[in-house]
Amino acid sequence: MRVHKLHSWKLTAREAARVQSELRGRWEGRDRFAEGAGKIAYVAGCDAAYFLRGSQGLGKHSRWRAAREANRAIAGVIVYRYPEMIEVERVFAEAPLRFPYVPGLLSFRECPALLAAFRKLKHEPDVIFCDGQGIAHPRRFGLACHLGVLLDRPTIGCAKSRLIGEEREPGQRAGSWTELTIASGGKKETIGAVVRTRDGVRPIYVSPGHRVTLETAIRLTMAVCDGYRIPRPTREADRYVGELKRAG
Image 1 (cartoon, one colour):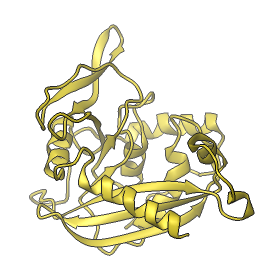
Image 2 (cartoon, one colour):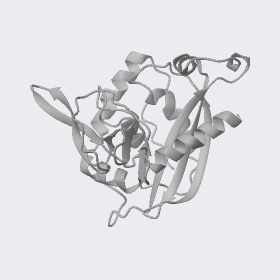
Image 3 (cartoon, one colour):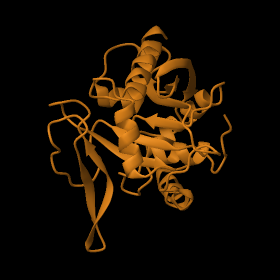
Image 4 (cartoon, helix red, strand yellow):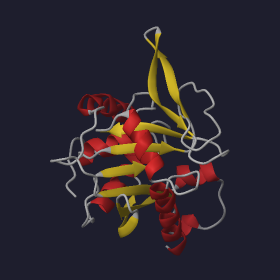
């Protein structure tokens, strides 16, 4: 896949925040899929994991300490034929971590490895599901937005937890959802959805990444769910990078 080089990766945290605000100007919130009828032929899920390479990786660390002290990232992408959800390809890439662990700026830590994996794909996905936030982010530019703009592909953020915003509990049936909102200029702005993906389980947080509306993001997320809380593309990508990390 082609990756658009829109900024340097050698940035301070302040510079990275400014890049997010600048790239936000390239963000599209309307549905824009492949040319022609806009048919979705392939979807993908992606995820990244951190680890320590070398002697410093020996020993046990807490989750947060491990995340901060990691020196490598490994990213995985799995592509499926849609709507059958038949896997057609999986790739991975490893890259050094050059950006510190800063909440709200995690895309600068993960994207280099993710982009290296996407470059290897033979089947280019029409929609990409990300284990992270889309516009439900302090600068409205989370990982799914960043990746979508750099790849110029529709992306959807499917996060396990909320980063910002206020929510109401959705109904208990799968497919129920409520708006995730934030106060902005004296009004409430909708930045995502709290979606129940399976009867009675905790909801996930869905937000547009790039080139999709919230309604479409919810519909497609439910379309790739298969009875588990986490949508299949991101769930299997998470499992994939976990296996690669343990094998490495």
